[in-house]
Image (tube, rainbow, N blue to C red):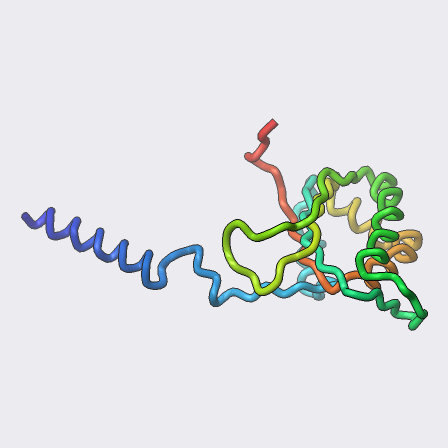
Length: 168
């Protein structure tokens, strides 16, 4: 009888936590904030991490109208300015041995909640952090980056390693 009461109590606690705040899918307290540039803490974390191959998952949100830092007049949308960057970045990626492996439009959210959906998802495979850093600090990339900044309302850039997740 004691075992029955004990297991019933554990089951009741588990069910209560699931329905009243213990659910790990409850994102009401989480904040998702797009950005155009990484914070100093994010840069330091990237620089100090293990230098292994990784995927960069980009959740991209465009501005309605492109806004260039130099104040130039433009009729480009944010998407069009970012498309210029995308075309140019292919060459920069190739120079450091990186390559895009997926890109697509975001249609809807299947699971979870966010205040606003991103416009595009893009995934790039980098051979190392050093390779990404080398690309991002090259003069040629910095010249292309102005189109990225002009077109982006913000993005999330998520570093993913594939250790233990090889589905091929």
